[in-house]
Every structure is written in C-alpha cells, then in structure tokens.
Image (cartoon, rainbow, N blue to C red; front, side, top):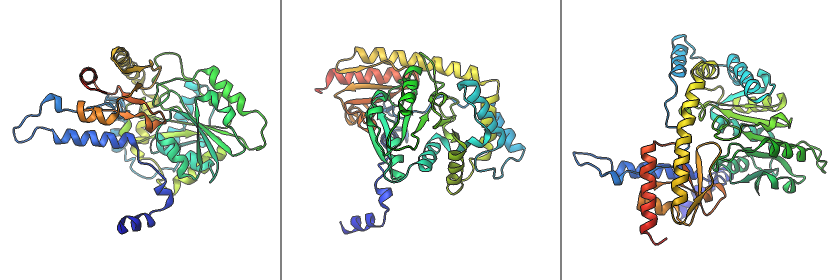
Amino acid sequence: MALVIHYFMNISRRAQNISPSATLAISARAKKMQEETTPSFGHPSKEGNRVINFTVGEPDFDTPDYIIEAAKRALDAGHTKYTACAGILPLRKAICEKLKRDNGLDYAPNQIVVSTGAKQALANAILAIVNPGDEVIIPVPYWVTYPELVKFAGGMPVFVEGISSIKKSITSKTKAIIINSPNNPTGAVYTETELRALATSLRAPRSNPDPIYVISDEVYEKLIYRGKHFSIATCHDNTIVINGFSKSHAMTGWRIGYSASSVEVATAIDNIQSHTTSNVNTIMQHAAVEALQGSGGEKFLKDMLAEFDKRRKYMVERINKMPKLSCNTPDGAFYIMVKTNVNAEQLLEHARIATVPGEAFGAPGYLRFCYTVSMDDIKEGMNRLEKFLNTSSV
C-alpha cells in the first residue's frame, strides 16, 4: 500500500487526472484473448474462439498504391531531413486548396499546422486556447479523448445533450465548444441549418466579450452516406478546423492530420508543437500531398464508402431484429450505437465479441460497434450476438 501511495505522490496531478482510453484498453484485451487462442504446436484453434473485434475505428483497407508510391519517391529523393514545424509548404498549400475546393473555406498556408494525426492537432488546439478554469462545452455522446484533452489543459468539460442545448449552457467562463460531424460514436451528421443556428447563437451578447471558439473535428467528412458535410467555419470566424488522412485515405498508421485556424491561433499551435514533436515525419508529408492531389483518390473513396454502406445497412437490419437491442441508422462515419442492457464484458467473455461500452462516450446503456471489419466477420459477429441473446438470461 505504501508503494502505491508513493507512486502517486511522484506522478503529476495532471497525469493522474487523465483516464486511459476505453477504446484502446478493450481492443488490447481483445487482442490478448485472440493471442491466447492462436493455433500453436500443431493444435488448431476453433473458429468460435476467435474474437470478433468491433472496437477500433480503423478502416480495414490498405492505403492506396498511389500514396505508397509517393512515399517511396520521397525516400528515393532524399526527403529525410527536418522540415518547418508546421509542415512543408507544398502540403500546406494542398490543404488550403482542399479546404477551398471541398468546404468553400479560404485559408493561407500560415494558417495551417500539420500534426502527428488529428489527435495531436486537437491537443494542440485545446492547449493553444484553453486556460485553467475555462469551460469547454462538449455535446453528448462524445469521442472519449475530448474531455481528457480539456482536463489536460486545465479546463473544465461541460457536457450537454446535443448541439441544440449548447446555447443555454454558455457562461462567462465558456472558452470553446467541441463539435464532431460526422460523429464518433453515433455516426450522426449535423445539418447546415443546425450549424448555422449554433453560429448565430454564439454571436449573442454576453458578459464576457471574448470570442467563443468552435473546435470542429471533421475527420470523418468524407464518410457520409446521406446528406452532405457542412463546416461551421463557413459561418463562424473563430473556428479551428481539425482534419486528417486516417479515415478518408486509410492512413491510420501514417499519423498525419492538420488544423486550420486564424493566424494568431495557428502561430500558438506551431509554437506548442515546436516544443513537443516538431515536424511530422517528412516522408509522410510528401505522401500526403499526393493523397490530396493524386488521381486515384476519388475512386478509392467511392469504393470504400460503398463497402462501408453495405456493412452499415446489414448490421442495422440485423441488430434491429434482435431482442433487447435497437439502433438508429448512422448517416456517416463507421459506427453504430446500440441501445441494450447487455454489457461489453458479457459479450467479450461469453460470445468473444469486442465492443466499446457507451459509458466511455457519456452514453450508458449503449454499446458502440465499428463496421471496419470484413463482411464475413460482421456476419459471424451478428450470428454470435443473436445466439448469445437467445440463450442468455440478460
């Protein structure tokens, strides 16, 4: 006991205040269970022992060849040195062109900072604007990392039920609002009408004259099945746009994302990053230019989206036919939130199905399923789920 107390006395309060990622923790446990049943020494493992892992939001598609070839060319050309912390100019220009082409947004390269994934871009943005005691409004359900990053910066997460409840939760301490569309974990897509209404409400007079920032996480913008993406930066000047390549280009392991903001905020973000990681991997930056400008991107995205759509429809239909389960049809991303009294532990232990409990997203009574696994695995997972529900006493 004394050793435990001593350990925590030597760990910063900031670190103690951060909760581990529930998504990564459950995924790691599922992988460990899988390793324990992997065939060895000529003893085959039964198919039923295999864990069907619905936890991690990682496209099960390989990065397109045209991007991989660009990385090889960068290596051959000797692009292996440091770059500007904010990223190489060709990439920042390509991001500006993308934001103009896809979102109708006008940014200059000095307003773009390329970071090690969208997660670092989010962390940088929050550290750049949030002071200890500032309030940051986060609609529920939320991605597990948002409140942890706010706490890390010394801020106070304020949870609200959807963006329609944001206005009444604004106080003199409100510094920012984090929105995510398409949403993780629900797959919901905010409409232009909803986002314009939010922007209008943020212009209302209040006792604190400082502007309220919107941190808009748009990393799933290319994964929409119904409707279309609209960026609130179109109608709210104090917006920090967060985006990346992981979801749209199947580049999760490449770790490259970016932020777009005012020059003042971008300069602060650049300064923060210069003392943490400095520039993103140089080779990956050159590959990212090709990801945005190469000719193979549209077909790859169309094919990937069609496959995700097929999986989405199949899972929603199966889930809503099962007892004790219900779900809405997601309009974007690759997640389904399932309402149920079954918990993640039960499914993992008895059906070898890995999911993420809704508590991690501020939504108890739900489980999040990712349809980023093959259709064969989805069918096997749904069959196991149905069998478990029909034979268990939950």
